[in-house]
Length: 237
Image (cartoon, rainbow, N blue to C red; front, side, top):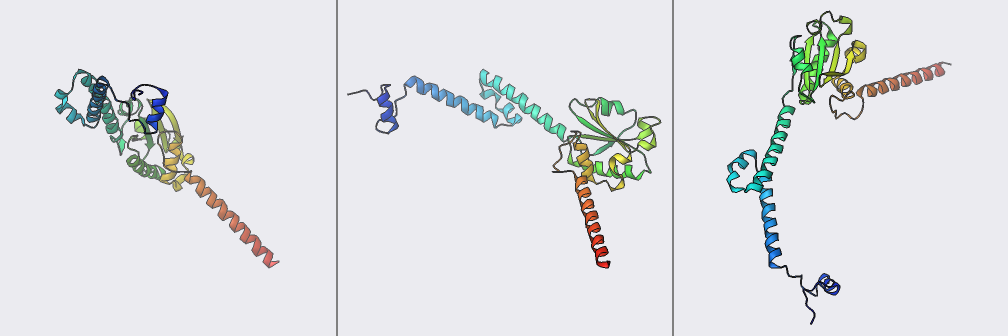
């Protein structure tokens, strides 16, 4: 009778059809599989642990586990630090000229910074400060700062206010200078968010430019008024 454990094509076909039982695993292979499962179990265990639990259970791991756990601990620590950085901000920080280098040009590598130059008594500057306060709460991984223009840059002309500079790694990546750029006192927070997002500083969840929606509505209203006026003229004739 043919050996049911023999590695033959016929036996493989019979096993697939369920006529022969699965091939017996040699004892050495069973032991190896058990060790693999054990190691996988250990890996899964420490991947599910917090950093504190890893410290408490470190005596239970062998040298190989310790090396893997140390790498894993470093990854978890880096993730935690990144998460902490993202929640560092959330408000608009007032700075002076002396703070400029430390807070803006020497900000952490990879950190976006939005600087608003303003002056008291200019309504559009006040409006933008209000909008930036809301955006700072929404985008806590971005550093928002503001400064009275002449305090930060001596003799900075009022005609250029409001001004927003966008920095990354100490370099200006975008700039918005003067009231015309912002569209005047009709500027909404969503419009400012969209404008800033175009420079890459924030990841907006707005699907389209809010200003374009207003322009489309305005044009639609103008066309409607024109058609109505034309109809009235026709009736009078």
